[in-house]
Amino acid sequence: MENDWKKIIHIDMDCFYAAVEMRDNPALQGHPIAVGHDGPRGVVATANYEARRYGVHSAMPIGCAQRLCKHLIIVPPRFDVYKLVSNKIHTIFHKYTDVIEPLSLDEAYLDVTQNKVNEKYAVDIAQAIKRDIFTQTSLTASAGVSYCKFLAKIASDWRKPNGLYIIHPANALEFIKSVPIEKFWGVGPVTAAKMHSLGVTDGATLAKVPLHILREIFGKAGRTFYDFARGIDNRIVESNQIRKSVSCEETLNEDTADKSDMKELIEVLATDLENRIEKKGFSGRTFVLKVKYDNHKIHTRSYTFNAPISTHSEFITAAVMLLDKAVPDGQAIRLIGIGVTDNLSHSRYDYDNMRPTLDFGEY
Ligand code: DCP
Ligand code: MG
Image 1 (tube, protein in one colour):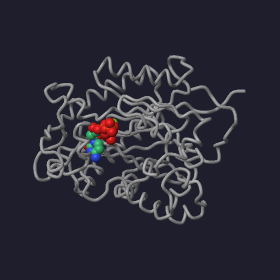
Image 2: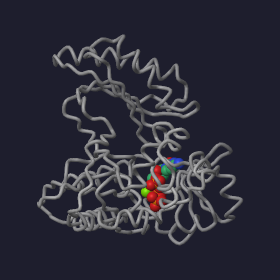
Image 3: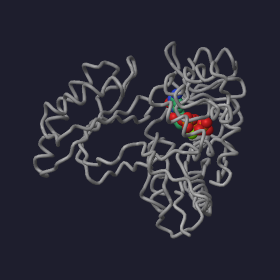
Image 4: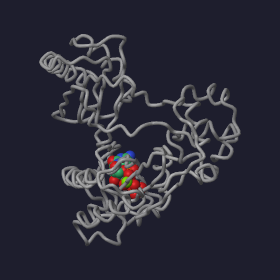
């Protein structure tokens, strides 16, 4: 019998910016380093493993990192170089599949259920990608393989650095029991604290909480957590090459956290989008807003109207509504994109379609 388990790989480069800096300046190797802008307002973008041993981590103020680690070397970021490496790894991904969802410069989901090299085992593809990345960039990546996104992502983290870990559908439920709640997708410090107050510390304790309680406390996400505890995550790998869409984007002259600057750019983009849609005779109901933070992480938010949208004012209405959701106050961004798509059925969660089967695929 054919099974319908998807084969998903999550790839994540190891201490990405720091690894690139150590590669390009071997004198840094073996010393604790943090990548970030030095100065009173500087924060650590990432640290190498030597520095992490002192407790230095991403998003920590530089001053604080220096107090923890006296000999810490601060290296200014070189985003253009990181971008080049990112392009290289994406070219490698495309050798194997076009269904790629980037999460940031160094991280992506790949759906290899169908793949361009006719390889049966996702684990072999993951191994090949790791090998290609190392050969072409002299950098290591960690890979996770599973049948859904949240497990693939946990798996890539499980054996970091230079790791490869597979969570087979047959073992998933057993595995999930042992996963600390902090490692679940969508669980940040605030959610983790609420989970702890419910007595939830891992997958096993999460599975004991009834759905209505999770719903009451976490809203919509409650259902997601309920399903995760049961190994259910039906989110598709959303490749950024949505075919049926029209969009435009623009990098800001300077990174900005000022919402009025963002709205100004959106005004310009909306005019551009209106023209493009008219030229192509395109019809779609879903408006998409994409922003790239100053740390290069990409966030998208979408809103689906009841009827196709095509005018400047409709785009502005939707964009203004989504902007606060996509950009927390104070967050600086470097790029904005807007678009319209007709991917109506791309709801992120399609629970009813998830039919657990007893027939386990080969990984
Ligand atoms: N980054 C950043 N600010 C953050 C988090 C990350 O600027 N708060 C940047 C620097 C990282 C890169 O994004 O090198 C990738 O982020 P990861 O979370 O994947 O962290 P690393 O790749 O550095 O380390 P790991 O080996 O844990 O993946
Ligand atoms: Mg990484």
